[in-house]
Amino acid sequence: MSAPSPRTQQALRQRNLSLALRAVAAGGPLSRAAVAARIGMTRAGVAAVVDELLRAGLLVELGPGRPGTVGRPGSALALNDRGPCGLGAEIGVDHLAVCAVDLTGRIRARVAADAANRDRPPAAVLARLTGLVGEVTEELRGEGLTPAGLTVAVPGLIARDESTVVRAPNLGWQGVDLGPLLPSASPARVGNEANLGALAEQRVPAGPGADEADRGERAAEPAGAGHSAGTGPARPGPGRGAAAAGSPGPWRNFLHVSAEIGIGAALVMDGELQRGAHGFAGELGHVPVRPQGRPCACGGRGCLEQYAGEEAVLRASGLDPGRARAAHPGPGARIAMLAARAADGDARVRAALREAGGALGIAIAGTVNVLDPEAVVLGGALAGLAPWVVPAVERELGRRVADPARTVRLAVSALGAEGPLLGAALSVVDAVLEAPGAVAAG
Image (cartoon, rainbow, N blue to C red):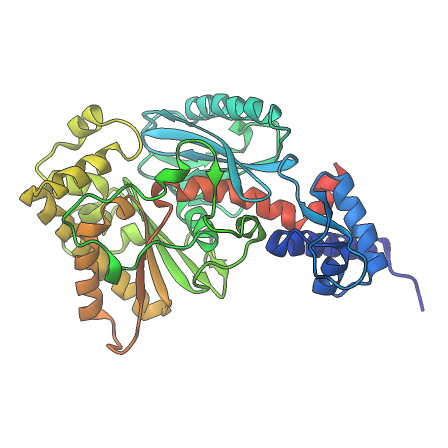
């Protein structure tokens, strides 16, 4: 029998490193014997793999393992929270943000800045973003962390090369290759913000469902507020390694709908993100809900974005979008203003939010009829306005879902507007868990 080829041996090594690292991420701290049992390797084989992960700074030894195990207790292994980490960045219409997440899923640094990015040259936007990445990277040095990569979330269509923005209408960008403009200190790529928000949603349980939501007598606290002001766990609860491990959230089949200036969606089926033939799946904001309705920047008419996007809601509330941006700059500021007015009983704002929810419900119902997800998760601005938007969404789902006996869970994201940024950083952590040999070789 011929010996395995070097390529086969390398692939097997990579697979074993990933299996061992993911086992610790999902259930750590674990002894070497426990890792061997979980991934089906011999103790001798696991010992070699673990030693390599320790040398690469991906795992650490905590001392004697958990009591109650059979035989002599070994050292407990855990993910290293002072080794490689993931950098995530977000380019919004009116802000920039960067965060770092360690291998355990904990946010270790975050910085954000107001920025008027609409119609601004991409080079100027990326120059400022690079400065923010530098600030976070410098802060990480003091924590003993090293970026393993960078993912930048953009509100638009991203080509499969993960570098080219095919179209981002709310930024005014079309056919822009951001690759040469991205920070070069670590491997970098570009991702769609709705897709990255869905990735984060798989790791962080959603908030209360529509059936448990406050029906609008008070303003909702912005979801994810506990994660927006510095450090803290990316996932609440005792499983501190679960976020990094990529363990499924409450659903393996769900539609994640995210709204800010525009509206995007992402579909996860059997735990896997579905991007479509060209990588452009999820343009829910350009699904027509009023076929002869208002003209849209995409060239169509009656698109959902013209009725449920931020600017549409501001106009329907009797507010000028330009003046509202000037008076309430920064991410989430206008949503917080609308939520406060709705909570105070502003009839016009509440009517605008009902109209937005109705339009959103029409688009979601059509998607549910075609794709049959078990849940719909509302994120982004929708999370902060859920008490006034969700009832109208529910009504349309009840009217329009083809099978009245079908149960579709409607839930509100626990991350809110933080989802794409956190998902961007976690995507880098996922890459490390998938290919730890690349870190070990470096």
